[in-house]
Length: 210
Image (cartoon, rainbow, N blue to C red; front, top):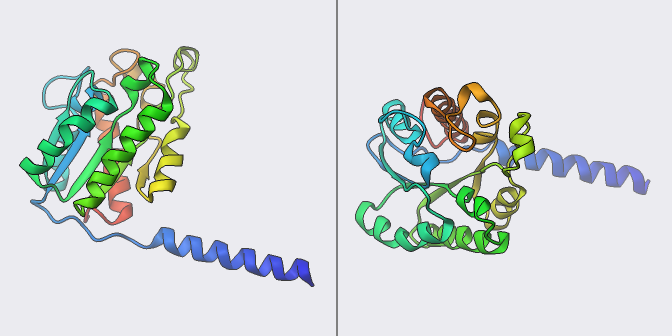
């Protein structure tokens, strides 16, 4: 009897979780300002001007997308410039793409996580919808054999802060030689795939109207 009761409870929890996952968020209207806070992956390093994924997203979404990607930026540096960006642009949505330079510089994961958490909290205090993009856990051997995967920190942080996580965007792209300009940056074709996957995720979430 107890086993049956546990099974029923488990089924109810599963159905409830699925219902929560399927609930869509309010759409960000066309013309709204969207801030992409990132590093060289947002700036578009590795592709010609205008082929970065924020520019492509602006073309396909109707949003006013601000590309605040700065090559070489760490999570700490991005956190430091966030207040000015919020005051200047007052975005309806912030997309956070950070952490890669922290990993390459062997900055402590606890420090990176704390900086990202502070960015998320600043957005929440300003009542700004936030999306976190997972970045690959870069390992040369995995990169060479096309086996990159997202760093586990992002899933943990998203769960703890109740932040939307968009995963498996950069890892598949940077695992394929045909889609990257160097070992850490996509090429134009790679950025097109990044933008397409991000846009599809935003549509699925309800943030971007089709």
